[in-house]
Image (cartoon, rainbow, N blue to C red; front, side, top):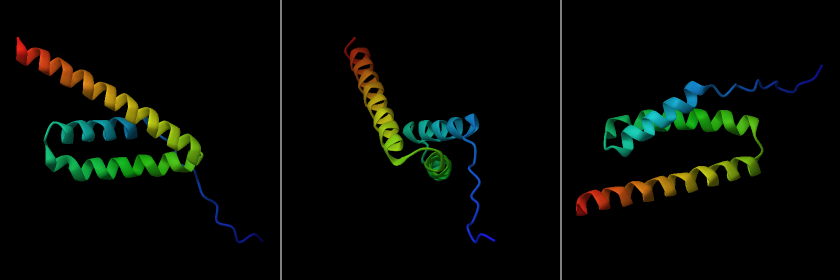
Length: 86
């Protein structure tokens, strides 16, 4: 008999991604009461991702998400600046 523990890989559901993004958006808007939800959903999603992908894939994915977030924030700041000057 083998003494190895069998680990079941949990599926990454669309709800996991949606809940994480919604919580993050609410915290970004200033609703600090949703910070605990964002941490809970984000850590659950990260745990599922770490079971499925290699460390290199995770790092590349996080880098892509970070670059998209930087571009989105800069576009939003630019639009707000243009709106304020008009």
